[in-house]
Image 1 (cartoon, rainbow, N blue to C red):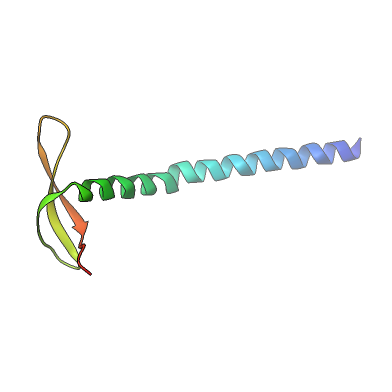
Image 2: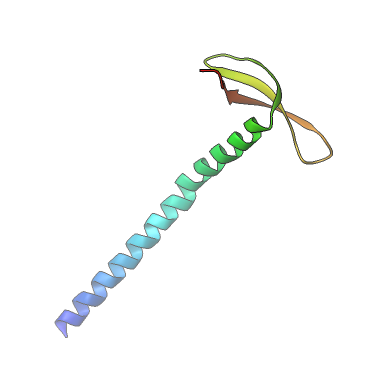
Length: 79
């Protein structure tokens, strides 16, 4: 019986640890990844770019809603 209790305890610890890792990923890591993917997609569709500072360019991106535009800062593509 003592062995079964130990196995149950280890299973509970493993489930709690996996849940904690999932929470950390969804709250801290995923928003950063999503933001970088979105910024990269917007920069690939940007136009009217002018030189910025520190290796960046200031561009215009046309949003999906009613043709409105948004100013974005993208990394410079020239290497």
